Image (cartoon, rainbow, N blue to C red):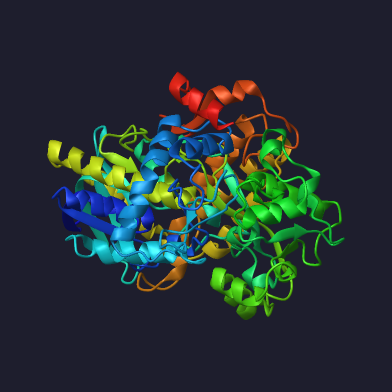
Length: 603
């Protein structure tokens, strides 16, 4: 084995967003040695971009809320292909995790009597999102980071993991490289927690930051872990569409939660045109009732703008395709209209949505207190990911855990807004705690030296090619393929063509070349990301072809209806003995009678 610098930890956490930080804190609390590896700088994780709030049934604004209603909302939003055990634990434990965050110093917005304020959000029956204006993720990372640095955690910043190392059927550590100098480092660990986030950079239009290249999903897959539900990609209904330089940047659902409405180029609120049958009883029949709902009227029903994200995104896409969109290919999101209802509306908007006000003012020269925004769908989140045990978050590979967006199960076919942040807290804590328990119960494994040598050799290959294609062109081509052929509306023929193009791109990646040396080389970094992007893109596409129905974030134009038979299983992806992807149907465990009753009582 090459003479790699080697660092030993009991628990290695890969990823320093909300899930990674919470996992590291939980593991350190058990007294084990914890290493935290992050691709960027500490505090720069994509979690800081989360705006709307963290979902937890605190009942501070509406005392009818409870974990049972939250559980039922999550299952309904996920179209009942969720891991029901994860949905149950999430709903039960989210309030405690939020109060814990508050005790560690998070400064939430407050009700008049001093409790944590909660706002409305799509798919949630009652006001449930604890928030800090529209900067909740930033406050979460600040709080977790400040608390975590006092726990004795070793932080390795700007290191990217190239491969997981194994010892037989258990994980043994990881090989990573320093993004500044290009040096390799071997991390030996008894347990590893993956908390690397999502896959949005596989698509051209995305709200995701540069780190989201599917690293955790790809690392787990190639190490022998199983992926699940990769077809379920969430396209957030509202991203910026103009100017082109900011296309895809998120426009928080909190705008709609505070009373913002969606209109087409005819000035009509088109969301009233198509309300799903299973949400009709909960959705306002007229604009006045919807407005009263956003203002806290417990007897009012929610406006259709607060239906689930998959439905709102498809409705916007329909308006644009049928010629009723805005000039730049979106629709209008109008919060300025509330000046008809509220005195001092401009000040109210700036207080409730400070980031949105500055974002549009600085990037698009639009004053959202006086004029509508142009918005359209943007790739935002993947409900699928690494298959884990609902209680422990361990994968099928012993000692390998996953939490947050890179793990599958909680959200089913569609995630409700705000559930991602409580997901990070609940299952980050569980993953870290159980990883520490595993580390205590097992000796350090011995990684296969050939795995590290091979990973380092492959990583350096682009420098050895005298000529070849640039990595940026290949990444751009892949993003175009996924955006156009595996996007919001899917068809078998288009996705089959996408698979062909992905295979061609894989051949091009094998010939990619980079100039210069290993220090500060963004071309090399992109070349190394391409393998992960190709893996997750193929998994998404194959899974989407296999699911011949429309459900949640997965919509098939050639199979537009739900098929009850597809509600009985999750589609899983694993690496076959021949190196090719294998798809399987994993039967979903029946929901226990007691939880069935909870769903029935929630209505």
